[in-house]
Length: 436
Image (cartoon, rainbow, N blue to C red; front, side, top):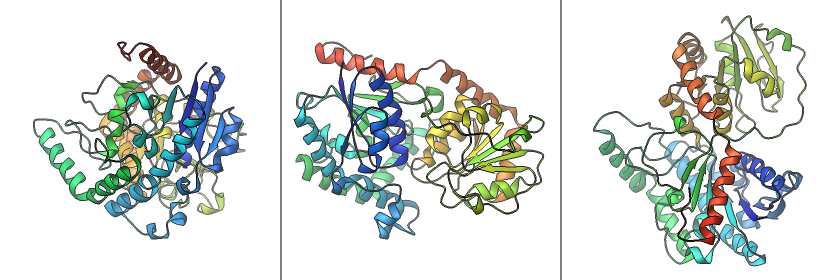
């Protein structure tokens, strides 16, 4: 069997998908080593992988970035993006690379599987192929590889029809790389030079274009069309992480199908302020002829309006295997995994997320026709209500979600990953072979 090294920056949304992969690879008999924060040791050892701790100078708590970096609080828009890319991802890269080298010095590794924002892997990729293992970039966010057919990643701007698309994208790319992210590009050159002796060989946020393979965990129907190199593989969404049994709440009998069910959630991380999306949804739909089901993701129910409207029911956690098959609309802040999960069930969406990768997830929801993109982090109650009513009354949204659901049903993400890994081994044994 093979030995695989998984690497992830210390954030819940980065770690959880890789735990699914680690469990699968361990179950197939492979040795799996997992390099990340000490905070995730127990979760990693539970799936049977070997835990390796990042050094302190690479162990940034991305679940509490304001606590780790007091200067971050209050930043918005491009300033917030520049701060995050520089401090949360770029600057730990050198320490991540040193940690990778230490692991590789302990024994051979057949491939490194990494989420794209683990910059140490991008730095390692700068070395010649005969001086490192194959590096597989795991697409747990929307595919951000550059193309003249799409706007630069992070702006949340979908493709446009007609001959002006490419000129517009070229102008936006110049503006993004030279103006918006100009300081970040200069920082990337300095950081890479300190670690590997020269700047990145491509725009560092596009390093996946030079990975040995990219495994993207969605289907082509949810991605912008563009010409892609052969090393990019769409394999479908990851299965849901194994979860503890969640009992049905006492109010479950109200979900009897007599009225449309609207589920709203802000996930399990970006839910410190339920006023962003959950509360506007509750208020906006209080008089609507729907049942609103709230999951706070672990936040106390006391943070919700009291009393709740008669058509609203809430719990900290809910059994998604029971809830999603009966859900008519999902209202969400646009986490990639949650959106993929909903689309796998053919559920249309209303999305309100403009931070991190959520701006790109939300843009793809609107572009693909599977839902309404509210283009804000804090929609008003009326805006949410109107969007939900639009999705419920216009069958095109559910039809588009159903098309993607059918595409996802024909895929098998874990089998797809296995095919890529076997292909890398074949190429390693015979350099004339091609990765398919």
